[in-house]
Image (tube, rainbow, N blue to C red; front, top):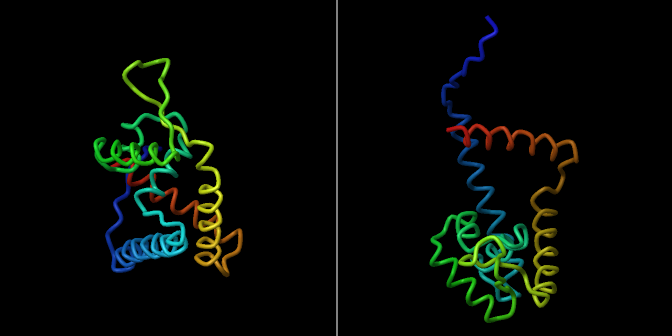
Length: 152
């Protein structure tokens, strides 16, 4: 009595279809955003890394690589290029002499504004016709799915 028991849901055609559709929608959103930023001459790997640094200022190369699910060496090469271009900066960390903290440079601010505008345009197109209530409910459902997958 009162026990928490995990309930196994039988996979149905509709749950499989939803998983497939989530994948397609995510790919469409990324593709739309890629087209929006193509005029900026920036690749997906570059904007992904810049975005990760923007969300986690002071993160290490290893942390950025983990977030982006890429090798630390690949992240390091991309960070090197973006530092050379003046978009990122590496700073010493007080807590670990070997690690370097990664930050956006001041020169990245105009690019960040352009990326934000492209994101808004993509979001406006993707979520056209959905109410704030619809978006909140969708967010709640996606959070539950995410939590389910994190427990696995």
